[in-house]
Length: 609
Image (cartoon, one colour):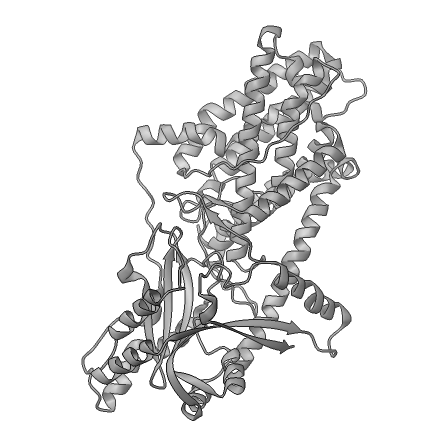
């Protein structure tokens, strides 16, 4: 099943959940009532899970001129990173007494790397593994999840979120701005003893490009331009070997120095913003896949869903960029760290694309295996050659990755334990019916906000145990965001009836620019209006009107995990300290909802696992 998980509330759905929902779908519910002789015979409508399914998104069709324009626009966004690489590539090498053969060897390595990895692997092969026009490591993973039944006890939603084709690890977004901007500003070093360093954190939107435009831009402009640039720098160094540390600006003719300095600085800023924006997208994808705690995600464009901004991520990158720039005090050391970060992404991409070849593209196993062996060997040799750089700055991406890995693993482990507890303690149908039937029913509407599409969460049992009563109308509400700017009012709600009488399930759909406002009676009135459309008789409608007139209450669950003493101390530390810290300091799943405080009741419950 294809669907998009929202930014702040992750809808957890898997095949088993869909099947379970179909068992309690609207059609089957109506059939049961019809068997009892109630009105509504002959009523048919789509099952709840069928309504939930996302429509397939067809690829946009572009004219030749539009493709050419997109190719031009992709130069800064997609190829801003590799396009500014001549600023620092040669200067990253440290050679005691370089000779002609050294520079020709470096040039040969650069040209073959551009050809085999950038052109053949990425432009001609990897770009075809897009997830409906979306690229990157997490998009590859999301694509595979739609075709592979991964084993595990944590239901992770399949998502399709916008991302740039150059998405890297978390650490890469911090390294690229530092090295690109610093390398550009370092041009002053070759003309003045006073070194000016600066970096400005700004946001640049990620554009939407098709594969043909990206392939055209690289094949006919970026690739030839890089070859000429590196060949020219190598020719200059053969005659001026002492200028290795300032290759780019030293090879620039005197009259063109300052214009080149300005252009290079601006290009470096564009390249930096491309990777900063990519960091927003990869964090967003991580959140949607349930692998990272929630942070603020703001959409900056009404036209493109993928253009997002995260204040927390932006400030984190700013601090890390400053620390890296001040700590290394120069471009070459940052270059060492950058190279180590990139090569590990290449190895991961090679592994994922090989699986895509075999499972999705159904390429001959021998051919896919040859691809894997060739590129793993090539990139493995590059990795081995970079090992000595770990002590010279290459440890930075490992340190940043370790930081994010601790967060990711702690969060994932905590969520898996939470989901495991809820799966084992869900209220079954008979227990829920008995609980509702035996509870005192008071006038009004009770809206339970939950991220579960299937089943009754155990917090409802906890709520009834302490409150001793339930409203006459109960609605379980789950939110999801769609990859559209706005959802039409008539498509906002998906309603299903549960047992016993007066219990409903509702999925509320929002576009990325919709205001998730629930703080007035108009929102509840809209829910009631949608519920009336599936009402079977006038008595049911009267109950809805009466409940609405008596007011509504939003019940929000707050779960606290506690690892029992029966578990080992490391697991207890992860759950009781790390996961709980992340829970308290990152955004909760209801942080984006705008609900009137006077109508909100937050129920806390401790899960002892």
